[in-house]
Length: 198
Image 1 (cartoon, rainbow, N blue to C red):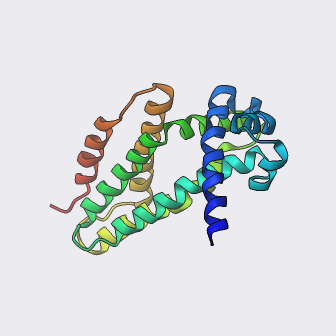
Image 2 (cartoon, one colour):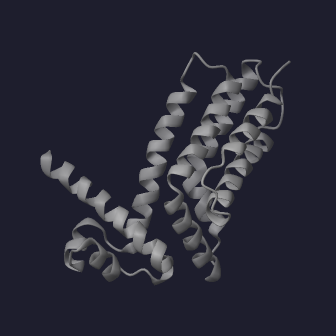
């Protein structure tokens, strides 16, 4: 058990340094050798933990999304909150995590630009990674409609609206380099309240 814990701890340490390399070099120019050098290890040792730079990148995203999904499901299951409060809290939590992981977001955007230049469709990759988050949001809207707390509206429209606010947060944090997007949390609160049954 101790070996597994140490292995995972080392993977996270490598991840932190790899993010620095991705930030400094960009996804395309970051190499496995540069990551190994930054970590103070050989490429051979780095292969013990990751197959390649894309594996490191995917691991970082998976780590973020897994924890986020767990937290969102806990909020969704919180019976002390009504549907409006749950949705507001969930979207605010997502935005808070985006603020905390601004470096990773910068690398993700660089990667998406990289693949879009190679005629790949970045939207497919983004949707694949965020499908669980979108499903959680849509499910909470449906539960709110069924509970009579949210007006009967097109669930996809609300889901797209909330997701658009999340994308706006990413743009503001990474492209505009804002240190916080607190004002968006207020917009989310006002927006979600518009769907409440009066």
